[in-house]
Length: 389
Ligand SMILES: [Mn+2]
Image (cartoon, rainbow, N blue to C red; front, side, top):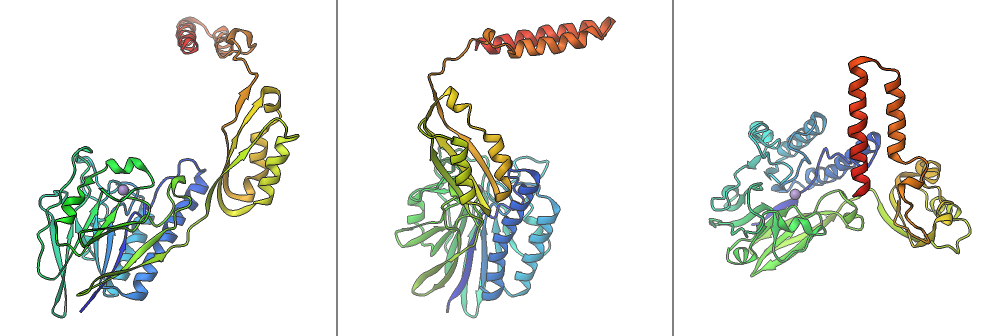
């Protein structure tokens, strides 16, 4: 007898993409929903026994209602289709104070649609059993603990039961490397604690890249996020996992996801280039792609006069409609360029500020006039200090 399982994590629904305009950020939120939908559609079609969602379902503790309703509606379909759903909270789902109190995913449990492991005590991990004919799949799950110290390794205590045993966790398992090194500090899990269990499988969330390792016969996998969240993930191939657990062990298949393309390109610029704008403009024209998120990094050394022939804002305005989004990141170094003393610049910020304030002060009278004079002097003082720094 075997159990079939879909393992996924890190949908990050309702994320704000702060580097984008409101409109583009909202389109990226639709991208997140599209990636999520691919998992939903696969699950509805293949009817696995269990769907495991290993944290960071939502990017924030209090997501907006549209993605929340969308998520619940799809979970209901999966539930009614005969798949049992299990969720844990990730560092983005778990409230850190009493104000929010509960995780958004708990609403699924309240509606009777899913099992949510809300506990975050690694020494007392909750277990729910799924029966199929005479076989049992024991799912142990624990949510992310936001108060756990980053230098102390977690040794999860799992009470192994008759049948198959799977552990769901959201944290940093030793031995698997994340794309983003910062992630290694969040709820770090001791790999020897995994080796010493008799678990059949560890379903992990948190790392946005796929990763797997076997610890003394126990397979542990990060399914990775379903959409590319940061530029570190631009070349990452997104997937989720379809597993079959039976007497012979765990077999799994990576199911690929389709995502919006993201790319960072380094362009070398130097003084021998006749027309820098033209070179960049050519590149942007030839590589135009309405779906693409592009970062163009300019590298190299230029003198100041040559640098002044570069018009980044104009290039941006000319080509922004040829892409989903792009930006020119200026990493150029300037040669033969002396930092001018502020006094020598005609419009130094202190002068500009002083002139502006004096113009206003002229039009004022009485106490108002005095307040503005004080404000002018405080401002000049602060600006002078900044200049000295
Ligand atoms: Mn996470």
